Length: 620
Image (cartoon, rainbow, N blue to C red; front, side, top):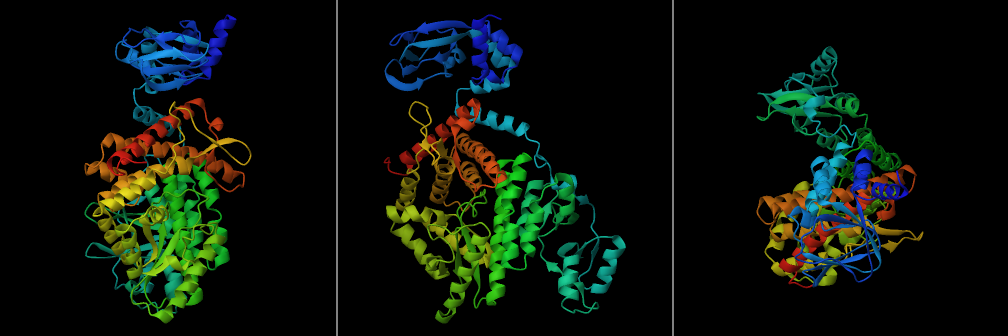
């Protein structure tokens, strides 16, 4: 191999998408390439002419102008151009001029088309839109995962068939003997074919033996009533998240008619996956004091890193991590109640932001508040002041650090009655101003994790309805979304900041995830959609005809890709014992990942531009 050919091969190996080709294909391609030199100011291609080459910038820079007038891009080393003309038969629409002395590699059209036919990654890279490239990138990454969640359903690992069961009037003693006879730790309690509850070893210890309840009493009096259930077709990921958030080890399975069809245990899942998320969830749920809870919750990054290494999908990993965060919040409230005594009136512990959307990774602070029943008397406020403070303190010890913005139950502004919360949302919606909206958007992602869920549900439904009816409010939150600065320059170059160490980075959460969340939230509120999760909102917008399906899926794909990068970054920090952040250095990514990242930012920018045109009055 001549030295010139060797240089071409070395360059192609490091340049997307050629590096994805087999070594033989790269070698063969290198022999077909023509080398061309252009001086600064030379016209390389003219609009309207016929083109038979794919151009790759080896060194230097070129400028593309649509029809020779409107500047569309500036390209530097490694960039390809003129492929759209090859895809549509050869007609050139952009004029291309060398900005400086430039060396170009030219691939013949016949070779370009042959590679598109034989190499899916090559074909995907030269698709004419970001959505196709992103979809292909996610599919390729999914194929490379080793995780046991992908495609696995509950029915694949559970014991299907009628579980051991008895009637609610069966004595506790007979129920225990039935469990011993069949060697099971969970008994289903049914009547007329309907599941009423379950009776477990834990119930036997805590509700019978420890409470001195006679064995002659009916088992229905001490069972766990109305247990959470799943269909056998549910994903294994959903089951793990449900167990982790609820701190339990068994889930009854039901068929389409609601009849009992099996029992899933944590042991079944652990045998299949070898994952510790359920164990950490159980440790959180069983923590007997704040110290034990903090010890269990501080293992969440360990579980996160383990699941990331196993190849768990980004959405599933966020769901698992959120489930563990939810469990920690719930247990913190329960322990605080144990210390202070029962609440004088019903209340709910509400979470906001990423935990409410079930999209939390690690390194998040706490965003929560108390929603208290309107029956609260003035003298009872001291209880909830102590409760909110204790919950926040416990969570801080668990690793959910105090919110710098004060959005936590420790703060009096976040401990309100239902009427007070209603008045607060009404002020935001009926009399919006930019400063208030800047601080308020997180409150429009809300979910109950402990206490009276009906209070939160009622407030959320009313809030969504009021927001949809006020177009001025929707325009304000649209303008707030446009504060996001997508780190992509007009010439498709990444615009970066410097970290404290001097490394060039971008904030993956603030500059990529938050804009997608804002787009979905704004449009969902504008159309009265009550969903809280970002993907659920985008899918609902598409299904209801408020967003093109292609645009919805593009944003979902962009969110998934960026979250994959965040997960890899945060898992590396967690594995090194460092606190997680979202500052990613593009230099740590492969050239192909950087190209797909640019596709993500292009998709996000289009979504923000749509908000600007349609809801923000056309202003930034």
